[in-house]
Length: 195
Image (cartoon, rainbow, N blue to C red; front, side):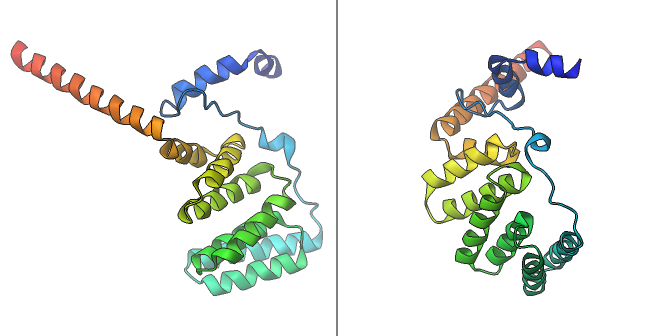
């Protein structure tokens, strides 16, 4: 039954639903979300992979405590044990960026995207992080490309950033906000006269 329902949903249906749930997206920017579970396989749970995952989690905990150098060490150990562990590269990129090493962060993000084949949650996060760096560097065109890729992988934050970078959407949102304010003002004026 569920698969039948999914097959019956057309691109137009998705566009209508996207317009309802994402009214700030500009028309024509329908983003098709990818089912993450179908496309990405978890790394094989070898002893090395389990240890790398443990080190990655410890690195995240250190970063959350503000111990960036410790987190970098732990992410490095995880990568040394499991050199194809895309998530560890993605998390190390975040720590490197927080430590001021933007070039190192970009290298790690590129590696995370490469290892994930540009698919799944890790790729979504890496594309979003890379877009933020590119945007800070003033490279809006490449930032938009990365945000589009992340949005296509289901990144809601990436969708919001795309909207904020679209001058037409920003203008439409501003005009819509002004209309709503005027309508509310007119309604409150009518209520005052009716009282």
